Picture 1: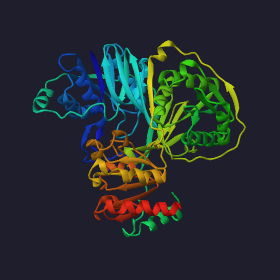
Picture 2: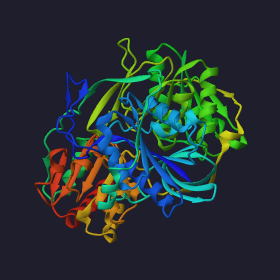
Picture 3: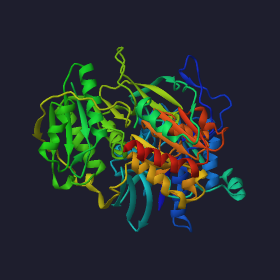
Picture 4: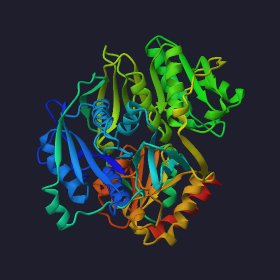
Length: 245
Length: 322
């Protein structure tokens, strides 16, 4: 079985988010980049599914050479090889198009991504790749098991869950619960240096969206502290002042 | 040109988030001086479809086919894209719900459209079509210009509110060709916890963290949430320890939420947690550590032990409700 896992290069979760050039560019100064945490979950499940010689896992990233350390991290976690589509990722449509173009003639049985990236919080890439390749896409899955050609998937829905099956090729975006993220071993880190990382050119894609500016949320006011023995005051403030209950 | 809104139903009923999406789509239609059509897929009674008129939908396309009784991403996307073409709709609005998140990108590709997901405001009207959307898990907003002719917007829950706009909705049956390959996923089971409020679109959320010391102490959290009609949530360490399910984890690597009221109990407020909840309209923090970073972003705070404060809060709330 051949599995393709899409990984995104994102700022570490502890990053303080600031912008430069009149709030038109993300300030990368001093920012540590990591494999998107949800993509790590997808990658970990792919590795579990192929363990014991049952298949291979290819990691794919759309980005410039600066992303290579993040891709090597995916190789250290256990991907067999990796591909980087050499282009600055413009928007999800562009990224999905690149992944679909690469995947279309490679005969992957399964494509996995994270449920969203923690930078732009898009949930777009998985379903867009699905549409470009005309294969089913299942978003925000919590469990994935395979039995031959049929996958059984648990998906979150508002106020509950859905269990579904799908046969043949598909793409799914993974949330927590699908797998425990794997930590690279020393052996993994050493072998990651020599695993193949292929760089391919991007294909031309129409522009459909672009971020023109960023804003940061307005600072909140100072906290109004209420003595611990006056909980009725809190209820009263939430009712009459904040008007939320 | 016109605006099309997809109205997601669950067991034949529309939720508040759907009326919110219709209200938002109607405001866009007004901005663009055009009309709003809604599309509903599945078995929904005419009286329920008529409800959409209250919020500004002047026409409702009703798709009711046996193969579409349950949500099938590919097939639903095909039907919605076909409806957009029929209505000459160049702006398609959906809720940024679990299903919406799977549908919107497929529709966007079908229509070669830019997609703004996680929209929090009406598009700008300065000549460019720009949508403010959440980014960096609530630490920032990205103003995204949709440059394509067709545009798709997925609206975040609680971002716009429900606005009545009484119109008489004309109901029209609609059908679109469904390819067999669009029906490859088969739903085997749907489990709904009917007594619980769904977290992503909850208006009130009661959340707790490691300060609760163990899963056995969640009774008072559930009681407080029950009294308020709130959803329950938790911090990452709590779901990592399996005290609560992953589906309750809010924060940067969990669900980002923006309820009207977020009550955080025994959660210190790590940057990753704050990222997912800081767009809540009102934040209440209960923590015994007065130095907990969460107090810096809270509107109201109580410094005290959760095991003493929460039972008193429950009593005060019962008294308030009379």
